[in-house]
Length: 158
Image 1 (cartoon, rainbow, N blue to C red):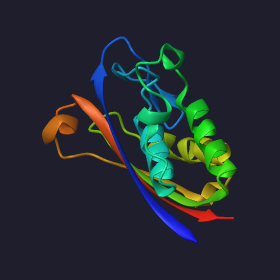
Image 2 (image 1 turned 60 degrees about the vertical axis):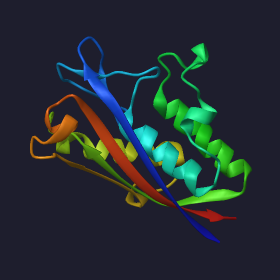
Image 3 (image 1 turned 30 degrees about the vertical axis):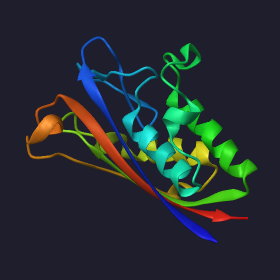
Image 4 (image 1 turned 45 degrees about the vertical axis):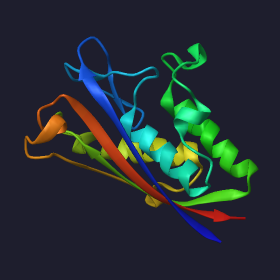
């Protein structure tokens, strides 16, 4: 049995925070604001995986009201999501994710993002796709007020 999931996340860009996307710390003057490390790409991937299994979303699993997740590494949270899926008898078929950001240029970091996500999800890198786009200076992402990400995935019941 195959199941499809979609995830979406958004975080505000602020000064004084690191920019962590896809588990990569990207040198940039702004970072993403959030309770955890605010890795918008990984958050979208987690929501897609949880959605495919009808297990809610990351807010249910890792509430921002819980101090245990303050500054949490999103790759560790993804590891927890993968364990939950495995416990329910699911394996990951593939993941396709899109980061929407005006700046910085993401292309130099995409392979490392794919490798990071694939490693935690226990799949080959060729089963994880990451791409980035701008919004041609339109909207909150185009105005560099924030970044957003979409992800879709297929999971399979063992």
